[in-house]
Image 1 (cartoon, one colour):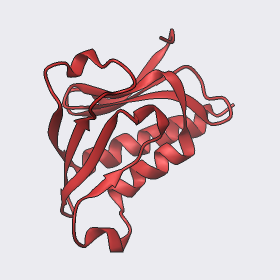
Image 2: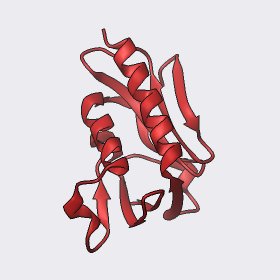
Image 3: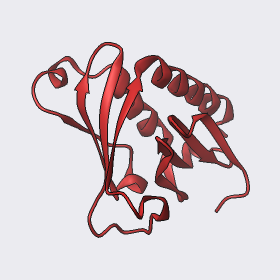
Length: 141
């Protein structure tokens, strides 16, 4: 685990941890939903894609708002989890976060759970994403 871990948001609701400084837009990232972490600080994530996918939660393409639930992709280090938007309004996202069967890594915080439903206010998401974006833009080496 890296020496320096920085956080944006509140891990009991929604937050993002990242480690160290950015090099070539790669940084280890972990996301927290309702006190449960997904992702790993052991491998880097490509930050432009990660932030773009977070922005898609805030402003999804018009065609994705119609019909069934849609999946959210954060990057390779999140492959043990399925994040699905199950309902959306202009102000609130309802997500289902699931630890997949036979995950690649151990996730001790999830030992008694397989999934969690999360209601996330879009203003909270916007605040965390904007702060994370500002930090990334300021730290790129």
